[in-house]
Image 1 (cartoon, rainbow, N blue to C red):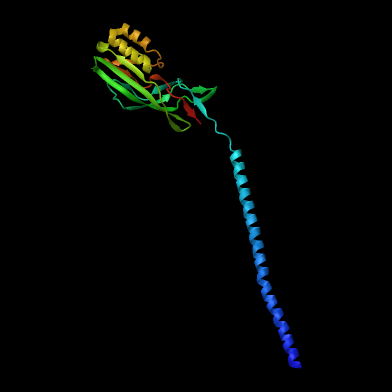
Image 2: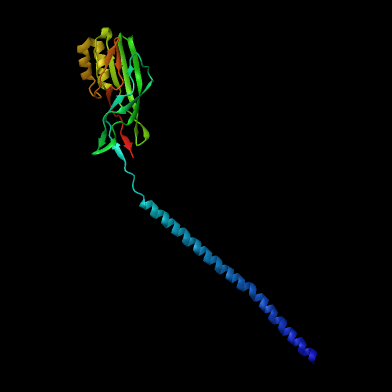
Length: 233
């Protein structure tokens, strides 16, 4: 009788023990799923918060103001060294500084004294251009706010006829070329006609003759015109 009772107790205990073991993994699995869900929710919320924060920073950045110096604007510089039909060669570069500031809409965008540079596009001493001397230069860059900016300007041309007779003391691509053509056609009078035919000159500047060649001494003021707009940020 006692053995039956003991056997029954052991059987009941074994059943309860098996039931408890089978229920624990289910509880752990549910807990793991809950934890993973909470982590995913937290990560999603953090990513959205970071995205919104980044968007707010972008919106808070001030807009960059762009000023456009229009084509046709005159840039007057002082040469850093002498250039001439005899002392210079085509492709030679020269330095310069802005002689006068450039304003756009009442705002100074290129200050006086700003560094600039240019290139000699043509240089023919006396005897290589049907007896006359020719000098042509262009401005190629200007430094603004510490940054060198490439620019496109009109060419400034000077020509001198043989025997020291001045036939053209003009600036600018069109007018300078017109004066050269006019000078070849009929001396001083022809030069005047040619200058009118090539209207659209570039600005002021002075040319001097040295042994019948064209020379622009250092510190000479020469004016160029922008051929294309220049954007300044």
